[in-house]
Length: 115
Image (tube, rainbow, N blue to C red):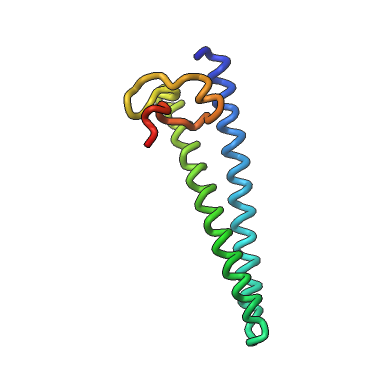
């Protein structure tokens, strides 16, 4: 990989990190709003709404976990940039093909090393 490719991959990681941080903020706001809606409801006739709110809260929590997990992978990739090990497999130390990094800039392993 040349310097231009590395610079572009790092820029992609930083842009994706910013996007995911915004998404996480939005999901946290959605969770707060949903919790406020739940606390405002209470009569038996609103039980269906409460069940719907709980389902929505679970969906938000699941989505938040996915975003946090991907954000963690991106942060690890950025750390590898700082250490000078970006683009090398964390398993074997072999170079990860540029095409893989281009498709998945936070990739930390060769395809053959994935479980």
